[in-house]
Image (cartoon, rainbow, N blue to C red; front, side):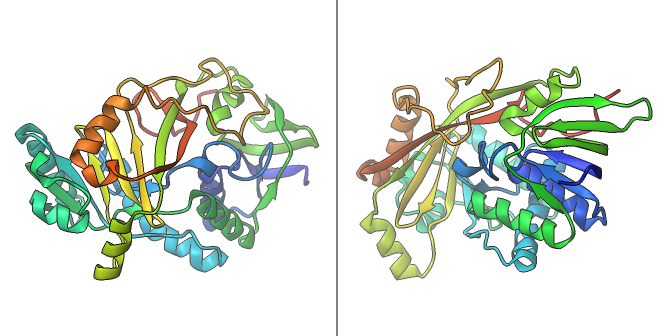
Length: 341
C-alpha cells in the first residue's frame, strides 16, 4: 500500500467503486480505494438491483439516465458483465389522482428527454401477465428500466478503475482521520497511514462512523428492506418462450411494492410505510456478510395488496425472503457534496 494519494475513497460498495472509476476516468490516477473487508461487503451484495430513469428530483433523474449507458461502458472496459437486463418497466396507477401524478411525471420525463409513454392497464398486462388489470386505471411505460447484478457491477467498476491506474486495498479498515494545517489528510488504517489531498466517504452502512472521525454527524439511517424470491413459475417460462422477451419491471404505488422477473420466477419487494430502522446509533464493524431475520408480518399489508393486484404471484411458492439493511438520508435523496471544514 502506497503512503500518498491525491484522493482516498473509503468503502468498496457500488458507490465507492463508481466514485473511484469516475475519478480515474477524469484523469486522477493517483487514487486509492480502501475497504475494511471485501468489495460489496455492506449492502451492495444483497441489493435487488433494479434501476429506473424517472425520479422526483430532475438532477437524480438525469443521473440515473446517464448511469444506464454507463453500465455498458464499464462492461466493455472491464470485461466484467453487469448482467444488465434492459426490460423496460411500468408505474401503475390505481386511482385517478395517481394517474394525474403519472401524467405530471410523464411531462417531466419528456422535458428531460426521456421516452416515457402513458398506456392502458391492458397494455401493461400484455407485458406483465401476472397482474389483474382491473385494479388499475392507467400506467406509464419507460423503456429504459430494468435490473442488473449489483455485485458484478461493483466489480466491473473496480476492474475498470484499476485499468485506468487506480489502486484498491482490501481487508484494511480505516481507524482514524486527522487533518493537517495545510488541509491534507492522514488516513490511518490497520496497515499504515496514507496522506491524501482529498477523502471521499463512501462508507454506506458505516458512513456515520467515518463521518464521526472528523466530527460530522451525517443525517443517515440504516433501514431494513425486504424482498422475496419465488420458485420457478410456469407462467413466467411460458411468457418467455412465447414472446422471446423477459417480463418487465412493475412499480405499484398502492401496494408500495416493486416486482420483476428473476430467473424463471419473480422478485417482489416492498417499501412499506411501517418501515423499521436497523442499528440506529451505529453499525458494528464486523457486520456485512449477514442477512437480517425476515419479518413477513410487518410487510403483510403490502403483500396482501400486491397479491390482489398480481394474483399470478400469490400462487407461487416462496423460495427465499431477503432482509438486509440499506442506508437512507432523511429526504430519500443521495447525500453528496463537500463537508465544511
